[in-house]
Image 1 (cartoon, rainbow, N blue to C red):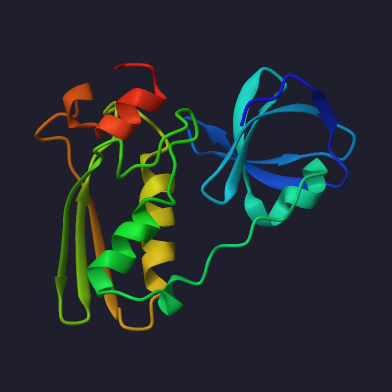
Image 2 (image 1 turned 135 degrees about the horizontal axis):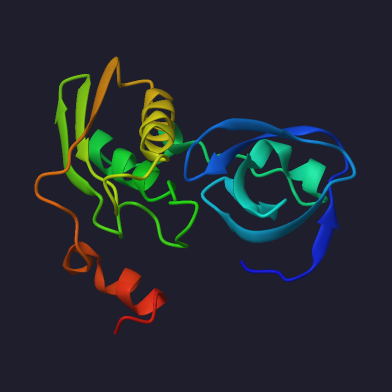
Length: 174
């Protein structure tokens, strides 16, 4: 979702600067442009910077509060549920989920333990810890998962060839 309209913040709300992941507070009355509304979060352009606002704070933007779907009620294996959750995590600068971007190298489920190996589109991206925390938080919601380990790796380095065809099509690369 891309809008060019300026929106006034209706109440103070927390956000994370993109790409550093530094926590900021956007004050009531500030003017923002909403550039993306995906994966349970909003990306806004504010004071010359991009920032990520949690979906639960959608009302501060004059938008809907985005609630996370209850994946634990979804039918399928634990691994299928995890992939559905991974597909709900979005890079705040790219309107494609991390699974379709090819950022998830491995999802291994052993009993109640989950191990994820993932990367970033660029090694210097400061949003890495934020994306890792989001993946961990979402997967922890599954009642059948007792332990999760998310490892951020840079070997092999990510390239566009790792994207799904759907991601390439969405980004105009096909």
